[in-house]
Amino acid sequence: MDDAYKQTGQTIEQPIGQPAGISDRRDRPLRDLRISVTDRCNFRCVYCMPKAVFDNHRFLPKSALLSFEEIERVVTVAASLGVTKVRLTGGEPLLRRGLDTLISKVRRVPGITDVSMTTNASLLSLERARQLREAGLQRVNVSLDGLDDETFKRVNDVGVSVQTVLDGIEAASLAGFDSVKINMVVKKGLNDADILPMARFFHGTGQILRFIEFMDVGNSNAWDLSHVTTSREIAERIDRELPIRPATANYRGEVAKRWQYVDGGGEIGIISSVSDPFCGDCSRARLSATGSLYTCLFASSGHDLVPAIRHDDASKLPEALARLWSHRADRYSETRSRIDIIHPKVEMSFIGG
Ligand SMILES: C[S@@+](CC[C@H](N)C(=O)[O-])C[C@H]1O[C@@H](n2cnc3c(N)ncnc32)[C@H](O)[C@@H]1O
Ligand code: SF4
Image (tube, rainbow, N blue to C red; front, side):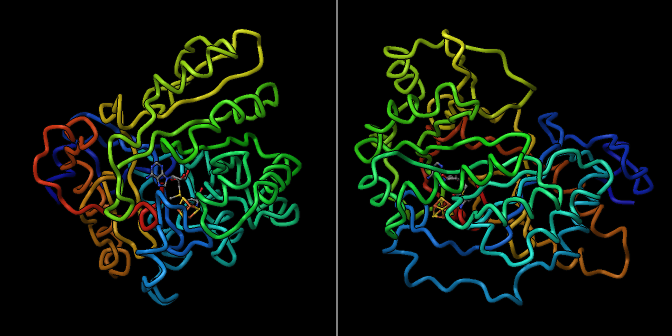
């Protein structure tokens, strides 16, 4: 038997649906799996897939993508090792045909209790939202980086209007998902003037707005610390007009710091991967559309699971996953300031945010 199994006390026969849990070298359990279902996107957000790099990019052919059955196999094994939450992402996940079929497969995997999707919502009609909901999708996170049309078009760089995304958010609300959260990446000088208008707009709606610090993911977005509006600055700007107070985390490892409006108008979240990194509780693994596993968002390379996924011997995949997670020691966010040599990182659109 593989060494990793001996170390963790985990057996391949571990009954599926009762995850004993596996931990990495920093005692962090594996709980979340983010799955990129496509590397393609209909947006060219300047902080993620800038045109200068991605307009000449050779995207993956369909034959290179994991099939839904293969994704289901990975989720089943991941669930047997402790994963309970799955998030579908990309690229833009709504570009993948038959997503509802994948969702129903994932939803049926024993042990998986939470299936969500992150989307730019530009293709989210009410009919599609209802179809995904019926298939078992529980929660949706929609990315919207401002309310000013000119600014938003400058961010997505393909001329999609704010109203198109608001229509997608409305469709998600009408479809009855357990929650619809809104994600706004804040890049100083680009859309930080929209922080307050966004807070005002979603205040009191029940939809949780989360601000994300512009991160140094990938190698193509010309990231610079001077472009980061810190979580502290974001909170201060909102607090001046709409007073907020810190709220306790919902669970260990929650990525966003929660803040409540003092007037009862709901809550916001702030994700400070740059100014206040959170590697200590990170329980996330990421699966690329081609079947590589990444144990950190800032990794240079992934681990190809395809040979194990396609191997006749069913124990290969559980062994490979358990070995990778139990050897994991990544904590890039916490050490970035001490890293002198810039190493190449994988693009966010490839492994999913
Ligand atoms: C890569 S996208 C994929 C899903 C979908 N296309 C969307 O935009 O929601 C997932 C998340 O990553 C965020 N993101 C992408 N690049 C980022 C960056 N450089 N810093 C912070 N967040 C980023 C996006 O805003 C989005 O919320
Ligand atoms: S953030 Fe999402 S919508 Fe924007 S380019 Fe990246 S993958 Fe596409």
